[in-house]
Image (cartoon, rainbow, N blue to C red):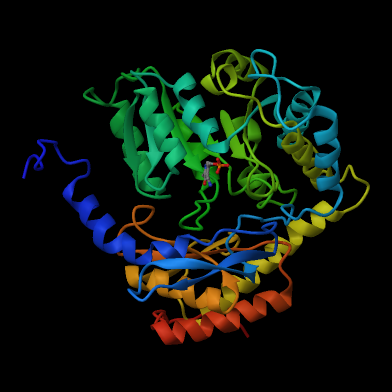
Length: 445
Ligand code: PMP
Protein backbone atom coordinates (compact mmCIF):
# COMPACT_ATOMS: atom_id res chain seq x y z
CA UNK A 1 0.00 0.00 0.00
CA UNK A 2 1.27 3.48 -0.85
CA UNK A 3 -0.22 5.13 2.22
CA UNK A 4 -1.45 3.88 5.60
CA UNK A 5 -4.95 4.33 7.04
CA UNK A 6 -4.30 7.98 7.98
CA UNK A 7 -2.97 8.83 4.56
CA UNK A 8 0.73 8.86 5.53
CA UNK A 9 3.37 7.38 3.29
CA UNK A 10 5.33 4.71 5.21
CA UNK A 11 8.19 5.87 7.43
CA UNK A 12 10.35 2.85 6.54
CA UNK A 13 10.74 0.79 3.40
CA UNK A 14 9.27 -2.69 3.55
CA UNK A 15 12.48 -4.51 4.26
CA UNK A 16 13.41 -2.17 7.12
CA UNK A 17 9.93 -2.48 8.62
CA UNK A 18 10.14 -6.28 8.41
CA UNK A 19 13.65 -6.27 9.85
CA UNK A 20 12.73 -4.02 12.80
CA UNK A 21 9.55 -5.88 13.59
CA UNK A 22 10.60 -9.50 13.22
CA UNK A 23 14.38 -9.84 13.19
CA UNK A 24 15.97 -7.05 15.21
CA UNK A 25 13.40 -7.30 18.00
CA UNK A 26 14.45 -10.87 18.76
CA UNK A 27 18.13 -10.18 19.08
CA UNK A 28 18.36 -6.55 20.18
CA UNK A 29 19.04 -7.58 23.77
CA UNK A 30 22.53 -8.71 22.79
CA UNK A 31 23.47 -5.04 22.28
CA UNK A 32 21.96 -3.85 25.48
CA UNK A 33 24.14 -4.45 28.51
CA UNK A 34 24.62 -1.15 30.36
CA UNK A 35 28.13 -0.79 31.76
CA UNK A 36 28.67 -0.01 35.44
CA UNK A 37 32.47 0.28 35.60
CA UNK A 38 35.58 1.49 33.77
CA UNK A 39 35.71 -0.46 30.49
CA UNK A 40 39.20 -1.86 31.03
CA UNK A 41 40.42 -5.43 30.51
CA UNK A 42 37.39 -6.32 32.64
CA UNK A 43 34.03 -4.62 32.72
CA UNK A 44 31.01 -4.80 35.01
CA UNK A 45 27.66 -5.20 33.23
CA UNK A 46 24.12 -4.93 34.50
CA UNK A 47 22.48 -8.34 34.98
CA UNK A 48 19.07 -9.04 33.52
CA UNK A 49 16.60 -11.82 32.93
CA UNK A 50 14.66 -12.70 29.82
CA UNK A 51 10.89 -12.48 30.11
CA UNK A 52 8.56 -15.41 29.46
CA UNK A 53 7.95 -14.34 25.87
CA UNK A 54 11.61 -15.22 25.18
CA UNK A 55 12.82 -11.99 23.62
CA UNK A 56 12.18 -9.08 25.97
CA UNK A 57 14.10 -8.69 29.19
CA UNK A 58 14.33 -6.74 32.42
CA UNK A 59 17.23 -5.70 34.59
CA UNK A 60 17.56 -7.49 37.92
CA UNK A 61 19.58 -4.86 39.76
CA UNK A 62 22.64 -7.11 40.21
CA UNK A 63 25.89 -6.86 38.30
CA UNK A 64 28.29 -9.21 36.51
CA UNK A 65 32.03 -8.73 36.05
CA UNK A 66 33.16 -9.90 32.60
CA UNK A 67 36.41 -10.21 30.70
CA UNK A 68 36.18 -7.34 28.25
CA UNK A 69 36.78 -8.38 24.63
CA UNK A 70 34.34 -5.76 23.41
CA UNK A 71 36.13 -2.40 23.85
CA UNK A 72 38.66 -0.89 21.46
CA UNK A 73 41.02 -0.49 24.39
CA UNK A 74 44.01 -1.55 22.27
CA UNK A 75 46.80 -0.27 24.48
CA UNK A 76 44.95 -0.56 27.78
CA UNK A 77 44.82 3.20 28.41
CA UNK A 78 41.09 3.12 29.19
CA UNK A 79 41.88 1.97 32.72
CA UNK A 80 41.46 4.72 35.30
CA UNK A 81 44.80 4.01 36.94
CA UNK A 82 48.30 5.24 36.11
CA UNK A 83 49.84 8.58 35.21
CA UNK A 84 47.62 9.25 32.20
CA UNK A 85 44.48 9.33 34.30
CA UNK A 86 46.26 11.45 36.93
CA UNK A 87 47.03 14.04 34.23
CA UNK A 88 43.40 14.01 33.13
CA UNK A 89 42.27 14.58 36.73
CA UNK A 90 44.80 17.40 37.27
CA UNK A 91 43.58 19.02 34.08
CA UNK A 92 39.98 18.73 35.28
CA UNK A 93 40.90 20.91 38.28
CA UNK A 94 42.91 23.32 36.16
CA UNK A 95 40.55 23.88 33.20
CA UNK A 96 37.22 22.37 34.31
CA UNK A 97 35.14 19.84 32.43
CA UNK A 98 34.36 21.97 29.40
CA UNK A 99 35.77 24.86 27.39
CA UNK A 100 34.30 28.26 26.76
CA UNK A 101 33.32 27.78 23.13
CA UNK A 102 34.34 26.55 19.71
CA UNK A 103 37.98 26.31 18.66
CA UNK A 104 37.60 29.28 16.33
CA UNK A 105 36.14 31.51 19.02
CA UNK A 106 37.10 31.22 22.68
CA UNK A 107 37.44 27.44 23.13
CA UNK A 108 41.16 26.94 22.53
CA UNK A 109 43.05 26.07 25.73
CA UNK A 110 46.82 25.76 25.91
CA UNK A 111 46.40 21.98 26.34
CA UNK A 112 44.79 21.81 22.85
CA UNK A 113 47.78 23.47 21.22
CA UNK A 114 50.17 21.32 23.23
CA UNK A 115 48.29 18.22 22.08
CA UNK A 116 48.31 19.32 18.44
CA UNK A 117 52.03 20.04 18.41
CA UNK A 118 52.77 16.69 20.05
CA UNK A 119 50.45 14.80 17.69
CA UNK A 120 52.11 16.38 14.63
CA UNK A 121 55.52 15.42 16.00
CA UNK A 122 54.36 11.87 16.76
CA UNK A 123 53.03 11.47 13.22
CA UNK A 124 56.03 13.14 11.57
CA UNK A 125 54.07 15.94 9.87
CA UNK A 126 53.98 19.72 10.19
CA UNK A 127 50.77 20.35 12.08
CA UNK A 128 47.55 18.81 13.41
CA UNK A 129 44.11 19.98 14.46
CA UNK A 130 41.90 18.18 16.98
CA UNK A 131 38.13 17.93 17.32
CA UNK A 132 35.74 16.89 20.10
CA UNK A 133 34.38 13.85 18.28
CA UNK A 134 35.92 11.27 15.95
CA UNK A 135 32.74 10.77 13.91
CA UNK A 136 32.39 14.52 13.36
CA UNK A 137 36.05 14.76 12.37
CA UNK A 138 35.22 12.78 9.24
CA UNK A 139 31.64 13.91 8.75
CA UNK A 140 32.37 17.64 9.08
CA UNK A 141 35.84 17.98 7.59
CA UNK A 142 35.35 16.05 4.36
CA UNK A 143 32.79 18.65 3.17
CA UNK A 144 35.36 21.37 3.88
CA UNK A 145 37.87 19.65 1.61
CA UNK A 146 35.75 18.17 -1.16
CA UNK A 147 33.00 19.81 -3.15
CA UNK A 148 30.66 19.10 -6.08
CA UNK A 149 32.78 18.53 -9.17
CA UNK A 150 35.30 16.43 -7.22
CA UNK A 151 35.47 12.66 -7.37
CA UNK A 152 35.76 10.53 -4.25
CA UNK A 153 36.98 6.96 -4.65
CA UNK A 154 35.96 5.13 -1.52
CA UNK A 155 36.62 1.62 -0.20
CA UNK A 156 33.31 -0.28 0.03
CA UNK A 157 33.89 -1.02 3.73
CA UNK A 158 34.56 2.57 4.78
CA UNK A 159 33.07 3.67 8.09
CA UNK A 160 29.71 5.44 8.32
CA UNK A 161 31.38 8.72 9.39
CA UNK A 162 33.32 8.77 6.10
CA UNK A 163 30.19 7.98 4.12
CA UNK A 164 28.26 10.78 5.83
CA UNK A 165 31.10 13.22 5.11
CA UNK A 166 31.30 12.17 1.47
CA UNK A 167 27.54 12.53 1.02
CA UNK A 168 27.54 15.96 2.68
CA UNK A 169 30.33 17.11 0.37
CA UNK A 170 28.13 16.68 -2.73
CA UNK A 171 31.04 15.13 -4.65
CA UNK A 172 30.61 12.28 -7.11
CA UNK A 173 31.43 8.93 -5.49
CA UNK A 174 32.81 5.73 -6.92
CA UNK A 175 33.25 2.72 -4.70
CA UNK A 176 35.97 0.11 -5.13
CA UNK A 177 35.91 -3.46 -3.83
CA UNK A 178 37.28 -3.80 -0.31
CA UNK A 179 41.09 -3.54 -0.27
CA UNK A 180 41.19 -4.63 -3.93
CA UNK A 181 44.03 -2.71 -5.56
CA UNK A 182 43.27 -3.95 -9.07
CA UNK A 183 39.76 -2.66 -8.79
CA UNK A 184 40.97 0.64 -7.32
CA UNK A 185 43.25 1.12 -10.32
CA UNK A 186 40.42 0.24 -12.72
CA UNK A 187 38.12 2.80 -11.05
CA UNK A 188 40.91 5.41 -11.19
CA UNK A 189 41.54 4.74 -14.87
CA UNK A 190 37.85 4.94 -15.73
CA UNK A 191 37.59 8.18 -13.75
CA UNK A 192 40.59 9.82 -15.37
CA UNK A 193 39.67 8.94 -18.93
CA UNK A 194 35.94 9.41 -18.26
CA UNK A 195 34.42 9.93 -21.70
CA UNK A 196 37.77 10.98 -23.17
CA UNK A 197 40.39 9.29 -25.34
CA UNK A 198 43.12 7.53 -23.32
CA UNK A 199 45.71 10.09 -24.47
CA UNK A 200 43.81 12.97 -22.77
CA UNK A 201 46.05 15.01 -20.51
CA UNK A 202 43.60 16.37 -18.00
CA UNK A 203 40.81 14.83 -15.96
CA UNK A 204 37.25 16.17 -15.88
CA UNK A 205 37.34 16.33 -12.05
CA UNK A 206 38.34 19.29 -9.89
CA UNK A 207 40.26 16.79 -7.81
CA UNK A 208 40.21 13.09 -7.12
CA UNK A 209 40.41 11.88 -3.51
CA UNK A 210 40.94 8.26 -2.51
CA UNK A 211 39.51 7.52 0.96
CA UNK A 212 40.64 4.44 2.88
CA UNK A 213 41.00 3.26 6.48
CA UNK A 214 44.10 1.86 8.18
CA UNK A 215 42.42 -1.11 9.89
CA UNK A 216 38.80 -1.89 9.01
CA UNK A 217 36.78 -2.35 12.16
CA UNK A 218 34.25 -4.85 10.82
CA UNK A 219 36.72 -6.89 8.79
CA UNK A 220 39.98 -6.71 10.74
CA UNK A 221 41.78 -6.12 7.43
CA UNK A 222 44.72 -3.76 6.96
CA UNK A 223 44.86 -1.39 4.01
CA UNK A 224 47.54 -2.09 1.37
CA UNK A 225 49.00 1.33 1.99
CA UNK A 226 52.16 1.18 -0.16
CA UNK A 227 50.07 0.16 -3.20
CA UNK A 228 47.46 2.85 -2.50
CA UNK A 229 50.23 5.46 -2.30
CA UNK A 230 51.75 4.23 -5.57
CA UNK A 231 48.35 4.47 -7.30
CA UNK A 232 47.55 7.89 -5.90
CA UNK A 233 50.88 9.16 -7.22
CA UNK A 234 50.44 7.51 -10.59
CA UNK A 235 46.99 9.02 -11.12
CA UNK A 236 47.65 12.31 -9.29
CA UNK A 237 44.91 11.74 -6.73
CA UNK A 238 44.85 12.91 -3.11
CA UNK A 239 44.81 10.36 -0.30
CA UNK A 240 42.64 10.56 2.86
CA UNK A 241 43.59 7.90 5.42
CA UNK A 242 41.44 7.19 8.50
CA UNK A 243 43.66 5.65 11.18
CA UNK A 244 40.93 5.37 13.86
CA UNK A 245 41.74 1.72 14.57
CA UNK A 246 45.41 1.71 13.65
CA UNK A 247 46.91 4.73 15.37
CA UNK A 248 48.65 3.50 18.51
CA UNK A 249 47.77 -0.11 17.74
CA UNK A 250 49.87 -0.71 14.63
CA UNK A 251 53.54 -0.15 13.86
CA UNK A 252 56.67 -0.43 15.98
CA UNK A 253 56.17 3.05 17.49
CA UNK A 254 52.40 2.84 17.47
CA UNK A 255 52.38 5.29 14.55
CA UNK A 256 49.55 3.49 12.72
CA UNK A 257 49.66 1.78 9.35
CA UNK A 258 52.04 4.46 8.06
CA UNK A 259 54.54 3.26 10.66
CA UNK A 260 53.60 -0.42 10.14
CA UNK A 261 54.49 -0.27 6.43
CA UNK A 262 57.35 2.21 6.92
CA UNK A 263 55.73 4.71 4.54
CA UNK A 264 56.53 8.41 4.45
CA UNK A 265 53.69 10.24 6.28
CA UNK A 266 54.08 13.12 3.82
CA UNK A 267 52.79 10.83 1.08
CA UNK A 268 49.38 10.89 2.74
CA UNK A 269 47.69 14.21 2.07
CA UNK A 270 45.11 13.92 4.84
CA UNK A 271 45.95 11.88 7.94
CA UNK A 272 42.90 11.38 10.13
CA UNK A 273 42.44 9.39 13.33
CA UNK A 274 40.48 9.20 16.56
CA UNK A 275 41.43 9.14 20.23
CA UNK A 276 38.66 6.79 21.33
CA UNK A 277 40.57 3.57 20.76
CA UNK A 278 44.27 3.36 21.63
CA UNK A 279 44.26 6.59 23.65
CA UNK A 280 41.39 5.72 25.99
CA UNK A 281 39.98 9.21 25.45
CA UNK A 282 37.64 10.95 23.04
CA UNK A 283 37.82 13.06 19.88
CA UNK A 284 39.62 13.04 16.55
CA UNK A 285 42.47 14.70 14.66
CA UNK A 286 43.53 15.62 11.18
CA UNK A 287 47.20 16.09 10.41
CA UNK A 288 49.16 17.31 7.41
CA UNK A 289 51.00 20.37 6.17
CA UNK A 290 50.85 23.71 8.03
CA UNK A 291 48.99 25.36 5.17
CA UNK A 292 46.41 22.60 5.01
CA UNK A 293 45.77 22.58 8.77
CA UNK A 294 45.47 26.35 8.90
CA UNK A 295 42.88 26.14 6.11
CA UNK A 296 40.90 23.65 8.22
CA UNK A 297 41.12 25.85 11.31
CA UNK A 298 39.19 28.45 9.37
CA UNK A 299 36.93 26.41 7.13
CA UNK A 300 35.99 23.26 9.00
CA UNK A 301 32.46 23.18 10.41
CA UNK A 302 33.83 21.19 13.34
CA UNK A 303 36.30 23.90 14.25
CA UNK A 304 34.01 26.84 13.56
CA UNK A 305 30.72 25.61 14.94
CA UNK A 306 31.35 22.75 17.39
CA UNK A 307 32.51 22.93 20.99
CA UNK A 308 36.21 22.20 21.52
CA UNK A 309 37.46 18.95 23.04
CA UNK A 310 37.09 18.78 26.84
CA UNK A 311 40.49 19.60 28.42
CA UNK A 312 40.75 16.44 30.60
CA UNK A 313 40.37 14.36 27.44
CA UNK A 314 43.14 16.35 25.77
CA UNK A 315 45.35 15.91 28.86
CA UNK A 316 44.80 12.13 28.76
CA UNK A 317 45.89 12.04 25.10
CA UNK A 318 48.97 14.21 25.74
CA UNK A 319 50.01 11.85 28.47
CA UNK A 320 49.47 8.74 26.32
CA UNK A 321 51.50 10.34 23.52
CA UNK A 322 54.32 11.10 25.94
CA UNK A 323 54.23 7.48 27.09
CA UNK A 324 54.30 6.18 23.50
CA UNK A 325 57.17 8.54 22.65
CA UNK A 326 59.13 7.44 25.73
CA UNK A 327 59.06 10.97 27.19
CA UNK A 328 57.81 9.71 30.54
CA UNK A 329 61.24 8.20 31.15
CA UNK A 330 59.99 4.57 30.91
CA UNK A 331 59.56 2.10 28.08
CA UNK A 332 55.93 1.46 29.06
CA UNK A 333 54.68 2.65 25.65
CA UNK A 334 56.84 0.18 23.74
CA UNK A 335 55.95 -2.59 26.19
CA UNK A 336 52.23 -2.07 25.58
CA UNK A 337 52.63 -1.95 21.79
CA UNK A 338 54.59 -5.19 21.83
CA UNK A 339 52.16 -6.86 24.24
CA UNK A 340 49.24 -5.98 21.98
CA UNK A 341 51.07 -7.48 18.98
CA UNK A 342 51.81 -10.68 20.96
CA UNK A 343 48.22 -11.01 22.20
CA UNK A 344 46.89 -10.44 18.68
CA UNK A 345 49.02 -13.10 17.03
CA UNK A 346 48.39 -15.60 19.81
CA UNK A 347 44.60 -15.26 19.73
CA UNK A 348 44.38 -15.28 15.94
CA UNK A 349 46.48 -18.43 15.67
CA UNK A 350 44.53 -20.23 18.42
CA UNK A 351 41.21 -19.30 16.81
CA UNK A 352 42.40 -20.69 13.50
CA UNK A 353 43.42 -23.86 15.27
CA UNK A 354 39.99 -24.09 16.89
CA UNK A 355 38.54 -24.07 13.38
CA UNK A 356 36.30 -21.00 13.43
CA UNK A 357 36.45 -18.65 10.47
CA UNK A 358 38.08 -15.34 11.27
CA UNK A 359 38.63 -12.40 8.99
CA UNK A 360 41.50 -9.97 8.70
CA UNK A 361 45.28 -9.92 8.84
CA UNK A 362 47.49 -11.65 11.41
CA UNK A 363 48.54 -8.31 12.93
CA UNK A 364 45.11 -6.77 13.26
CA UNK A 365 43.81 -6.56 16.86
CA UNK A 366 40.21 -6.54 15.60
CA UNK A 367 39.16 -10.16 15.15
CA UNK A 368 35.76 -10.92 13.59
CA UNK A 369 34.59 -14.51 14.13
CA UNK A 370 32.08 -15.37 11.43
CA UNK A 371 28.84 -16.93 12.66
CA UNK A 372 26.92 -16.11 9.43
CA UNK A 373 23.38 -16.83 10.70
CA UNK A 374 21.67 -13.86 12.26
CA UNK A 375 20.25 -15.90 15.13
CA UNK A 376 23.72 -17.17 16.05
CA UNK A 377 24.97 -13.64 16.71
CA UNK A 378 22.61 -13.22 19.63
CA UNK A 379 23.05 -16.81 20.82
CA UNK A 380 26.81 -16.49 20.92
CA UNK A 381 26.85 -13.09 22.67
CA UNK A 382 24.41 -14.39 25.30
CA UNK A 383 26.29 -17.62 25.97
CA UNK A 384 29.61 -15.76 26.23
CA UNK A 385 28.10 -13.31 28.71
CA UNK A 386 26.89 -16.28 30.77
CA UNK A 387 30.54 -17.34 30.87
CA UNK A 388 31.53 -13.80 31.88
CA UNK A 389 33.00 -12.75 28.55
CA UNK A 390 31.82 -9.55 26.86
CA UNK A 391 32.02 -9.40 23.06
CA UNK A 392 30.25 -7.42 20.35
CA UNK A 393 27.79 -9.02 17.98
CA UNK A 394 27.84 -7.38 14.56
CA UNK A 395 25.09 -7.86 12.04
CA UNK A 396 22.97 -6.08 9.48
CA UNK A 397 23.17 -3.19 8.61
CA UNK A 398 26.87 -3.02 9.63
CA UNK A 399 27.48 -6.24 7.66
CA UNK A 400 25.52 -7.98 4.91
CA UNK A 401 22.56 -9.90 6.38
CA UNK A 402 24.20 -13.30 5.91
CA UNK A 403 27.62 -12.27 7.24
CA UNK A 404 26.85 -11.96 10.96
CA UNK A 405 29.85 -12.09 13.23
CA UNK A 406 31.13 -11.73 16.74
CA UNK A 407 33.91 -9.24 17.02
CA UNK A 408 36.60 -9.45 19.64
CA UNK A 409 39.08 -6.65 20.23
CA UNK A 410 42.39 -7.42 21.81
CA UNK A 411 44.20 -5.24 24.27
CA UNK A 412 47.67 -4.98 25.74
CA UNK A 413 45.88 -5.12 29.09
CA UNK A 414 44.71 -8.73 28.56
CA UNK A 415 46.76 -11.34 30.34
CA UNK A 416 47.60 -14.75 28.87
CA UNK A 417 45.36 -16.43 31.50
CA UNK A 418 42.42 -14.23 30.51
CA UNK A 419 42.92 -14.97 26.82
CA UNK A 420 43.31 -18.71 27.41
CA UNK A 421 40.08 -18.73 29.41
CA UNK A 422 38.25 -16.87 26.61
CA UNK A 423 39.64 -19.18 23.93
CA UNK A 424 38.57 -22.30 25.83
CA UNK A 425 35.05 -20.92 26.21
CA UNK A 426 34.90 -19.84 22.55
CA UNK A 427 35.90 -23.37 21.52
CA UNK A 428 33.07 -24.86 23.58
CA UNK A 429 30.54 -22.37 22.20
CA UNK A 430 31.78 -22.98 18.66
CA UNK A 431 31.05 -26.68 19.14
CA UNK A 432 27.66 -25.95 20.63
CA UNK A 433 26.59 -23.58 17.83
CA UNK A 434 28.29 -25.43 14.97
CA UNK A 435 30.75 -22.66 14.11
CA UNK A 436 33.77 -24.76 13.19
CA UNK A 437 33.38 -24.07 9.50
CA UNK A 438 37.08 -23.98 8.71
CA UNK A 439 38.51 -27.20 7.28
CA UNK A 440 42.08 -26.05 7.09
CA UNK A 441 43.22 -24.93 10.52
CA UNK A 442 46.84 -23.77 10.46
CA UNK A 443 49.43 -26.08 11.99
CA UNK A 444 50.82 -24.26 15.00
CA UNK A 445 53.63 -26.67 15.87
N1 PMP B 1 36.45 6.27 11.75
C1 PMP B 1 36.41 4.93 11.92
C2 PMP B 1 37.13 4.07 10.94
C3 PMP B 1 35.71 4.35 12.98
O1 PMP B 1 35.67 3.03 13.13
C4 PMP B 1 35.02 5.21 13.88
C5 PMP B 1 34.22 4.65 15.04
N2 PMP B 1 34.65 3.57 15.66
C6 PMP B 1 35.08 6.58 13.67
C7 PMP B 1 35.79 7.08 12.61
C8 PMP B 1 34.34 7.52 14.59
O2 PMP B 1 35.09 7.73 15.72
P1 PMP B 1 34.48 7.95 17.19
O3 PMP B 1 33.79 6.68 17.56
O4 PMP B 1 35.72 8.19 17.97
O5 PMP B 1 33.57 9.11 17.14
